Each structure stands twice: as structure tokens, then as C-alpha cells.
Length: 110
Length: 115
Image (cartoon, rainbow over the protein chains, first blue to last red):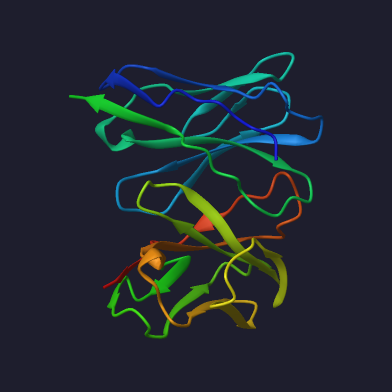
């Protein structure tokens, strides 16, 4: 399973953008980059995924480096409800499982 | 209208007992999973089933036995519970489980406490 590295924790202010980095230098060509988040006392929740191009959805944007060795999850305007642990996960075609790392604990200050 | 539901939400029991956790999904997905989140908050896959067939068994003690009566249900039975089994157990489902684009939907979790 290819490994990802994320900062243990990050802090931001409400209504400001948040950039959550993830390094995955051993990514292979068939690995998709997935982001999930886990709000307090809840199950993980899918956020976004991508392969090579940047992606946007209603929750966030995903910026993928040209060499695919890193990516950044962007929350455009953080709210208190975005406080969670964010996991960056590489999903290989046929893998059938998510391998969770320690994730980044995001704190949002009012 | 809950997509992935688990029962019970909390389970407190004595060492040595046998207990079951039930999971149901109404998403029409083919693949279901069990994950365990320990006290240090690490989430680790235990099992996955695709169309009622066991696909992944991640070196889980054989005291844990998943059972999938149909595509929409994946139950987890645990025999001879030990203190180390205390954790939050999450059920999840996904459309196929094979595609790198497949996304997983998680249930709310079952907090198991073994005394």
C-alpha cells in the first residue's frame, strides 16, 4: 500500500480558506487520490478524489501536483462544521480497501 | 433515510461473552466492509464482502466472523470477547469495491466496550 504523509494538525479561522497538504511520493500510475474526513463521533465521510487533474465539488477542491507526488485539499471557506480529521488515501485499482493513515486534525477557530 | 445503518450504537459487555453487530445498506451497493477504530483512533479494515463473498480478511482473529445473508447486510459476530476488542466498529459500503474511483459510505459506528 502506497504511503501518504500529512501534518498531524492544522488550525485555521472561520470563513478563511484552508489548504491541507498530503505527500505521496511513492504513488503509482493507477493510484487515485482520495480524501475522507471524520467529524467528531461520526464515521468517515467521502470528500473528493482525483487522478491527475484538479477536481472541484460542492465540498472542496483537490489540487494535484504535476508529478502527482503531492496533493492539496482546499476548503474555500471553512466553517466550524469543517473541524474534523482529514485523511488523504491512495486507492489502487482493484484494491478494495481504504488504508487510513493518521490524518490531519483540523481545528477551526471562530 | 439512512444509507448505511448499524445496530447497536453502543454495546457494553463482559469479557468472554459473544456479541453481534448488524449492518444494513440501502444504497444497492455490491461491496460491504468492516473497519475497526481503536483507542488511538487508527482506522483499519477488517473484512470486505462483494456480493456475499468474502474478499478481504485482514489477519483478524477467527473469533471475529462476518456473515452476509444478502448483499444489503453484513453482520459481525464476535466470540469470547477480550478487553482488546474494545473499539468503535464501522461498517461501510461501496458500489463495486474494485475501481480506484469507488467511494465508500460509512455507517455511524458501534462503540464496543468490553469490561
